[in-house]
Image (cartoon, rainbow, N blue to C red; front, side, top):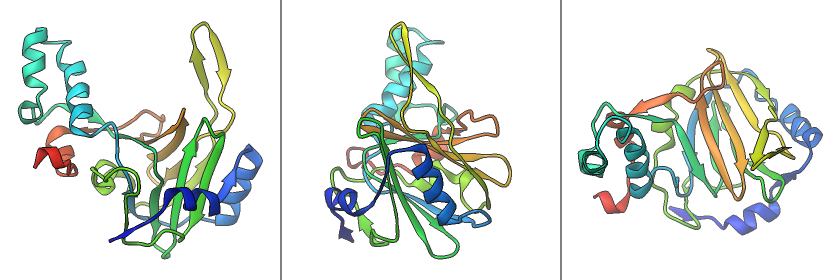
Length: 222
Protein backbone atom coordinates (compact mmCIF):
# COMPACT_ATOMS: atom_id res chain seq x y z
CA UNK A 1 0.00 0.00 0.00
CA UNK A 2 1.13 3.55 -0.78
CA UNK A 3 0.43 6.40 1.61
CA UNK A 4 -0.44 9.57 -0.30
CA UNK A 5 -0.05 13.10 1.09
CA UNK A 6 -3.40 14.90 1.24
CA UNK A 7 -1.84 18.36 1.62
CA UNK A 8 0.25 17.81 -1.50
CA UNK A 9 -2.76 16.40 -3.35
CA UNK A 10 -4.87 19.45 -2.44
CA UNK A 11 -2.11 21.80 -3.57
CA UNK A 12 -1.64 20.05 -6.91
CA UNK A 13 -5.27 19.16 -7.69
CA UNK A 14 -7.67 21.26 -9.72
CA UNK A 15 -9.30 23.75 -7.34
CA UNK A 16 -12.79 24.85 -8.28
CA UNK A 17 -14.49 27.69 -6.42
CA UNK A 18 -17.30 28.87 -8.71
CA UNK A 19 -20.28 27.11 -10.23
CA UNK A 20 -18.96 27.84 -13.73
CA UNK A 21 -15.56 26.33 -12.94
CA UNK A 22 -17.20 23.20 -11.56
CA UNK A 23 -19.50 22.80 -14.55
CA UNK A 24 -16.65 23.40 -17.01
CA UNK A 25 -14.48 20.80 -15.26
CA UNK A 26 -17.13 18.10 -15.50
CA UNK A 27 -18.01 19.08 -19.06
CA UNK A 28 -14.38 18.53 -20.11
CA UNK A 29 -14.19 15.37 -18.01
CA UNK A 30 -16.88 13.86 -20.24
CA UNK A 31 -18.06 11.05 -17.96
CA UNK A 32 -21.59 10.78 -19.38
CA UNK A 33 -22.08 7.24 -20.66
CA UNK A 34 -19.26 5.82 -18.55
CA UNK A 35 -19.89 3.23 -15.82
CA UNK A 36 -18.86 3.50 -12.20
CA UNK A 37 -16.63 0.51 -11.59
CA UNK A 38 -15.83 1.14 -7.93
CA UNK A 39 -15.97 3.77 -5.18
CA UNK A 40 -13.10 4.00 -2.73
CA UNK A 41 -13.13 5.89 0.57
CA UNK A 42 -9.47 6.69 1.20
CA UNK A 43 -9.68 7.92 4.78
CA UNK A 44 -11.97 7.60 7.75
CA UNK A 45 -15.75 7.70 7.48
CA UNK A 46 -16.70 9.40 10.72
CA UNK A 47 -20.32 8.25 10.49
CA UNK A 48 -19.24 4.62 10.61
CA UNK A 49 -16.53 4.27 13.20
CA UNK A 50 -17.77 2.28 16.20
CA UNK A 51 -18.90 5.37 18.11
CA UNK A 52 -20.71 6.77 15.08
CA UNK A 53 -22.55 3.52 14.33
CA UNK A 54 -23.63 3.09 17.94
CA UNK A 55 -24.87 6.68 18.11
CA UNK A 56 -26.88 6.31 14.89
CA UNK A 57 -28.35 3.04 16.18
CA UNK A 58 -29.29 4.59 19.53
CA UNK A 59 -31.06 7.53 17.87
CA UNK A 60 -33.33 5.07 16.07
CA UNK A 61 -33.84 2.61 18.93
CA UNK A 62 -34.70 5.24 21.55
CA UNK A 63 -37.86 6.00 19.56
CA UNK A 64 -39.28 2.53 20.27
CA UNK A 65 -37.46 1.36 23.41
CA UNK A 66 -36.70 2.72 26.86
CA UNK A 67 -33.43 4.64 27.17
CA UNK A 68 -31.80 1.74 29.02
CA UNK A 69 -32.94 -0.84 26.45
CA UNK A 70 -31.89 1.41 23.58
CA UNK A 71 -28.39 1.84 25.02
CA UNK A 72 -27.99 -1.91 25.38
CA UNK A 73 -29.31 -2.66 21.89
CA UNK A 74 -27.14 0.09 20.39
CA UNK A 75 -23.91 -1.55 21.52
CA UNK A 76 -22.11 -2.66 18.38
CA UNK A 77 -22.38 -6.39 19.08
CA UNK A 78 -26.10 -6.08 19.91
CA UNK A 79 -27.35 -3.94 17.03
CA UNK A 80 -30.27 -5.70 15.28
CA UNK A 81 -29.30 -7.05 11.87
CA UNK A 82 -32.37 -5.52 10.25
CA UNK A 83 -31.81 -2.00 11.62
CA UNK A 84 -31.49 0.34 8.66
CA UNK A 85 -28.79 2.98 8.19
CA UNK A 86 -28.50 5.71 5.58
CA UNK A 87 -25.93 5.15 2.84
CA UNK A 88 -24.02 8.30 3.82
CA UNK A 89 -20.33 8.74 4.60
CA UNK A 90 -18.71 11.76 6.25
CA UNK A 91 -15.06 12.16 5.28
CA UNK A 92 -12.23 14.69 5.23
CA UNK A 93 -10.13 12.97 2.57
CA UNK A 94 -11.01 12.48 -1.11
CA UNK A 95 -13.06 9.62 -2.46
CA UNK A 96 -11.97 7.89 -5.66
CA UNK A 97 -14.59 7.01 -8.28
CA UNK A 98 -13.15 4.48 -10.73
CA UNK A 99 -14.72 4.47 -14.19
CA UNK A 100 -14.82 1.64 -16.69
CA UNK A 101 -12.48 3.53 -19.04
CA UNK A 102 -9.61 3.33 -16.53
CA UNK A 103 -9.89 6.86 -15.18
CA UNK A 104 -10.14 7.49 -11.45
CA UNK A 105 -11.95 10.67 -10.44
CA UNK A 106 -10.63 11.99 -7.12
CA UNK A 107 -12.90 14.51 -5.43
CA UNK A 108 -13.31 16.31 -2.11
CA UNK A 109 -15.64 19.25 -1.40
CA UNK A 110 -14.89 21.40 1.64
CA UNK A 111 -17.39 24.15 2.42
CA UNK A 112 -15.07 26.14 4.69
CA UNK A 113 -12.51 26.28 1.87
CA UNK A 114 -15.29 27.17 -0.60
CA UNK A 115 -13.56 24.71 -2.89
CA UNK A 116 -14.12 21.54 -4.87
CA UNK A 117 -10.80 19.71 -5.06
CA UNK A 118 -10.77 17.35 -8.04
CA UNK A 119 -8.33 15.50 -10.23
CA UNK A 120 -7.91 12.36 -12.31
CA UNK A 121 -5.43 9.52 -11.75
CA UNK A 122 -3.15 11.52 -9.44
CA UNK A 123 -3.50 9.20 -6.45
CA UNK A 124 -1.96 5.73 -6.81
CA UNK A 125 -4.55 2.93 -7.23
CA UNK A 126 -3.16 1.19 -4.15
CA UNK A 127 -3.03 4.36 -2.03
CA UNK A 128 -4.34 4.22 1.48
CA UNK A 129 -5.24 6.79 4.12
CA UNK A 130 -3.14 9.82 5.02
CA UNK A 131 -4.83 11.33 8.13
CA UNK A 132 -6.90 8.55 9.71
CA UNK A 133 -7.09 4.89 8.73
CA UNK A 134 -9.91 3.90 6.40
CA UNK A 135 -12.75 2.03 8.08
CA UNK A 136 -15.37 1.50 5.37
CA UNK A 137 -15.51 -0.32 2.03
CA UNK A 138 -17.11 2.20 -0.32
CA UNK A 139 -18.29 -0.56 -2.65
CA UNK A 140 -20.50 -1.91 0.13
CA UNK A 141 -22.06 1.28 1.46
CA UNK A 142 -22.51 2.69 -2.06
CA UNK A 143 -23.32 -0.61 -3.80
CA UNK A 144 -26.47 0.77 -5.55
CA UNK A 145 -24.20 3.21 -7.41
CA UNK A 146 -21.59 0.78 -8.76
CA UNK A 147 -21.83 -1.03 -12.08
CA UNK A 148 -24.22 1.58 -13.48
CA UNK A 149 -23.92 4.04 -16.35
CA UNK A 150 -23.69 7.77 -15.66
CA UNK A 151 -26.64 9.57 -17.22
CA UNK A 152 -25.93 13.15 -16.12
CA UNK A 153 -23.99 15.32 -13.70
CA UNK A 154 -26.09 17.80 -11.75
CA UNK A 155 -25.07 20.72 -9.55
CA UNK A 156 -27.82 21.35 -6.99
CA UNK A 157 -27.64 24.31 -4.63
CA UNK A 158 -29.49 24.21 -1.33
CA UNK A 159 -29.93 26.44 1.69
CA UNK A 160 -28.16 25.95 4.99
CA UNK A 161 -30.03 27.15 8.04
CA UNK A 162 -28.13 29.00 10.76
CA UNK A 163 -30.52 29.86 13.57
CA UNK A 164 -33.23 32.08 12.12
CA UNK A 165 -31.13 33.04 9.13
CA UNK A 166 -30.89 31.12 5.88
CA UNK A 167 -27.91 31.33 3.57
CA UNK A 168 -27.26 29.74 0.23
CA UNK A 169 -24.17 27.62 0.09
CA UNK A 170 -21.44 29.25 -1.93
CA UNK A 171 -20.53 26.21 -4.01
CA UNK A 172 -22.96 23.64 -5.40
CA UNK A 173 -23.06 19.94 -4.67
CA UNK A 174 -21.97 17.47 -7.33
CA UNK A 175 -24.63 14.85 -8.08
CA UNK A 176 -23.69 12.04 -10.44
CA UNK A 177 -27.02 10.75 -11.77
CA UNK A 178 -27.15 7.13 -12.92
CA UNK A 179 -29.15 5.20 -15.50
CA UNK A 180 -31.85 4.03 -13.07
CA UNK A 181 -32.35 7.42 -11.41
CA UNK A 182 -30.20 6.75 -8.37
CA UNK A 183 -27.25 9.02 -7.78
CA UNK A 184 -24.03 9.66 -5.90
CA UNK A 185 -24.18 13.08 -4.22
CA UNK A 186 -21.05 14.81 -2.97
CA UNK A 187 -21.43 17.91 -0.82
CA UNK A 188 -19.35 20.01 1.52
CA UNK A 189 -20.37 20.55 5.14
CA UNK A 190 -18.03 22.85 7.06
CA UNK A 191 -14.64 21.08 6.99
CA UNK A 192 -16.12 17.70 6.06
CA UNK A 193 -17.44 16.17 2.86
CA UNK A 194 -20.64 14.12 2.84
CA UNK A 195 -21.10 11.38 0.25
CA UNK A 196 -24.64 10.06 -0.22
CA UNK A 197 -26.22 7.34 -2.31
CA UNK A 198 -29.64 8.80 -3.19
CA UNK A 199 -32.80 7.77 -5.00
CA UNK A 200 -34.41 9.56 -7.95
CA UNK A 201 -35.92 12.13 -5.54
CA UNK A 202 -32.51 12.77 -3.96
CA UNK A 203 -33.44 11.03 -0.71
CA UNK A 204 -30.67 8.89 0.83
CA UNK A 205 -31.02 5.16 0.34
CA UNK A 206 -30.68 2.77 3.27
CA UNK A 207 -28.71 -0.36 4.08
CA UNK A 208 -29.37 -2.99 6.76
CA UNK A 209 -26.84 -3.36 9.56
CA UNK A 210 -26.31 -6.96 8.42
CA UNK A 211 -25.07 -5.72 5.04
CA UNK A 212 -23.38 -2.58 6.35
CA UNK A 213 -21.28 -4.61 8.77
CA UNK A 214 -19.72 -6.48 5.83
CA UNK A 215 -18.14 -3.21 4.74
CA UNK A 216 -16.88 -2.05 8.14
CA UNK A 217 -13.34 -2.71 9.29
CA UNK A 218 -12.84 -0.69 12.45
CA UNK A 219 -9.81 -1.91 14.38
CA UNK A 220 -11.76 -1.69 17.63
CA UNK A 221 -14.31 -4.18 16.30
CA UNK A 222 -11.82 -6.93 15.46
